[in-house]
Length: 384
Image (cartoon, rainbow, N blue to C red; front, side, top):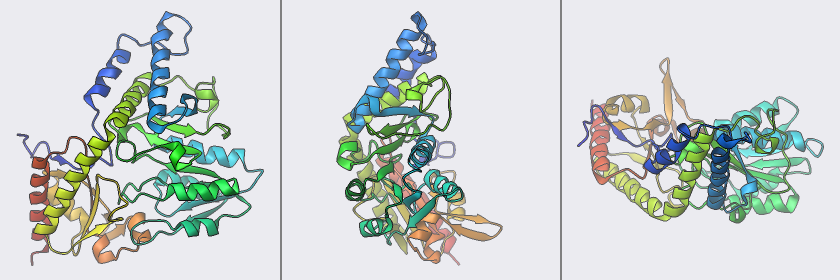
């Protein structure tokens, strides 16, 4: 059994995931001996080039698209920047209006805010108490000047899955490009670009058991982007620079595993999540669930503990459980996350919010241990 003082139970899989052993094994060959540059025309470039091509097919199979639609990037943040800035530059002759939501990841919100200061108009749409955007709000927000809608596939804090398919119908009928940040969804729910109806979709390697420092952007055929950087022309000129072969190989294998095992993994993660939720509710009073009760990622559990500060709770459980907070304390003042604020979670609840996210390796023993640690800490912090 692990020494919990040295190895806390890991319940922060939405922040990052450990590398799957099969991913590590696939990457090893391209650490050594296959170190070559995939752009080289000599012998040493052959295996790396084939590996990049294979990984592109593996990612495409997960997303149900052509390999030619996959552009490798350094992370989902870069993919989001390339999608949003690239479309804005390419289509600025048609309009200057962008529609997004208030609960996007900063990798979307900050990009849109930047564009808003540089000649573009951005509509930041509200969400309901479950973190769900209203499709009618999207429809009412678009205009003849709208060139891009960017709505995340699922929220990273509360797990709410957005109605991307319905938004796609609006975008398609108006000739508007649709982008979705899908960093949190591969391996948890189906991510089929054809079924979703999106033009652009971002993924991150380190959210699905691949290494950090690699991501991908799906680009529908016929959609043109302006690149963020210019160089020798790798990745169709949209992401020039020598490819991160090691990371790309890892992402490819991770996508193959996600496609093969998604239903099994999702069932396991949901079982662990629901056991965690039930255990906490049985042992701690005044606990509130954030996020949609049904339209939610199978591994994500955002809970608010009334009258408890999340920072203090994390301090108390730090040696035993690794989790994230939905609020931060700075100079004695509690700052609520933008997601919880947009959902209008009352402050007395929001300031005591933990995000707990399960993964493939989460066990029942982990859950039982975490429930005891969280319950003991929350109850102690409430004691007079």
